[in-house]
Image (cartoon, rainbow, N blue to C red; front, side, top):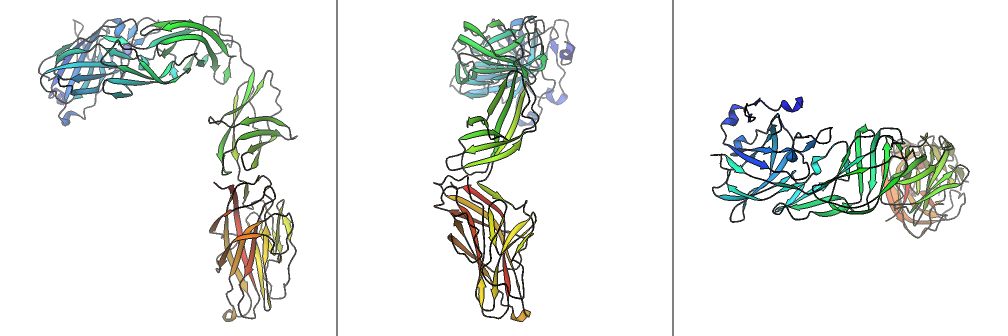
Length: 600
């Protein structure tokens, strides 16, 4: 208890605590209130604080100290022997003060533990409050400070994840019997006799020695109860006999043990008082290892202010290797409905239906023969209007432990031309003859282009041609959108830029612009440059000279309707304008970063 003595400046011979406050605090009114906290059957939690906020000194507030004397049942922390009770650091209570006109001078005001007696027979709580009007008040108190209040109704958020390595006073909810007393005016000490009633139930789990077949320290236990045991607990500060009310309840409760816990050591959980009748299932973890799931049967009314000891057995290790998939990002444009994991032989090893938790567990039960680590797999995503896939290499899988893999739902089509090589097919400028409709070249597994070029790893371009007596267009067509099921609009985005080169003297160069036409085709043909086949609902006129393979700064967005399933290909046609003049010219439309999604 040495660390707790540090908070006591002097212990007087009669057991009282003398406090030495800074000189500026002595200038404030100090009200000392004697609290005789008469405990009931369950221990509760206090807290200790060595310093106190002095920022309210200049706000016209007074410092109120509640000198609390209590027997062992009112203290709030349990020592290792399981019986000795002490105060705990940072303990706080909430206090209300209601006058005869039902106005509140104090409304769940927070009082913080600042000192305690070496023998734990007294403790001091303090708060700065506004001076109270003279008169008689009814005082109400709860422990700890509630999460929220509505008048005298105090609500506490009792977590479904608790530190089970010690008695958790944060959830040992108490309410005091209301008492009547004079205003806290700082002129004389006020005696206040508060009797607290405990409103929660404590479960004390233990693994008897020789019953931890996992043979590892316990770091977590996940429980599922037959009824809701944690959630938002509301009590009535005006009526300590009123039953607490549970809302937003949960049957799941996890106890964590940051430093691990072993056989024979107590494990604590604070739960809502209720009738627990049925099986409690639980799984014990040691780091990433876990024991086989186990269950115990209980038929018991767990009452307010009581402790229920429960012995549990830890089974042997559950030899299950879990690969948990999740979707980190979805670029398809609509939600997916299923995920299938397919191996390199084309065999589906598991199909998952999507869920709000975004967790998809593939479990290998029994001896783990690693045929997964480093192997190639595909994740196939199915949605109402598309089927797309992501290839990935399975990371090293840890046996008998959880493993996590993040997946990404790709675009219906995404092409940044990072894998393209150099291509030049009738796209360069020539002062001579380069007339006629040119045949297409194929690239990138299904793309075709005529009068087109590409710079390795960068972008593509299509080059319409002007000669003295004729214009010759160019075109490019994407690979088919084989994953598209039809029945939806397509949202398309791409980057574009323009440049040109014209022959002759500068004074005679006409500065010809171009118009690109964008749409789609449905046949898997290698269209020649002069072929105008396709549906082209969009056109745009360009006349600029700032584009090249490294400078493609414009972005176009379009919506295509009526596209058929699986055979749709995006199409661009480049047609330069007609102007008088005798010079030849090439007019380039640069294209990059093509994206297709399902339109919403």
